[in-house]
Image (cartoon, rainbow, N blue to C red; front, side):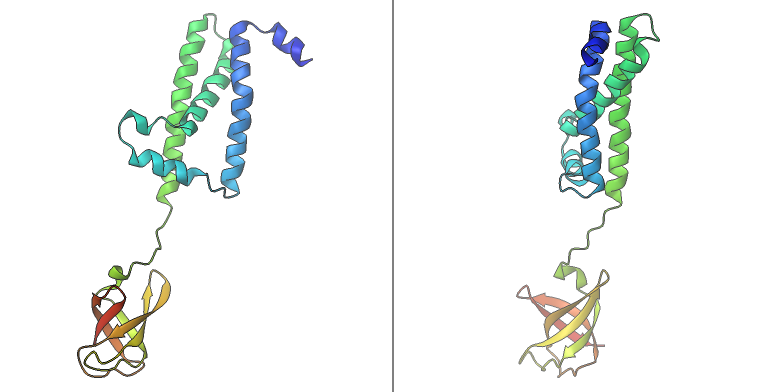
Length: 187
């Protein structure tokens, strides 16, 4: 039955079908993997594209896949509607390019929704904190402070050059010493 179907097609029409079937299966598999949180989803492809420059930034397997989906299915759809084969090829190429552009903008829009909540201690300089464990005065020891940053609370080591700061006091973070010790002052 499938052989009869392919035998009845003209060579160009058969080529469109031969391209469309595997490409559509791979595209469907990719979409399912993206929906269920595969590691090789939209995120990894976008970061590779936006950091590249020039034409090579647009040449990727994902863009090739999108092009071939648009190219093959538009070729199948328009083959019997148009008299001239080259019109079908031109429309197929234009549709393939349009698919690449559409999916690029969809992916770019989705990547804009991502958020970086990584904690970098330098980002909290100048922030207020609450003393969790008493901070000895004049840098004679280390206490602890609680700092809220990007919706999470961090417990960090702190010292002060001033007088002792008791538990529960509010302080401001002035500087970072030795990459992991905050220098604070009372408010």
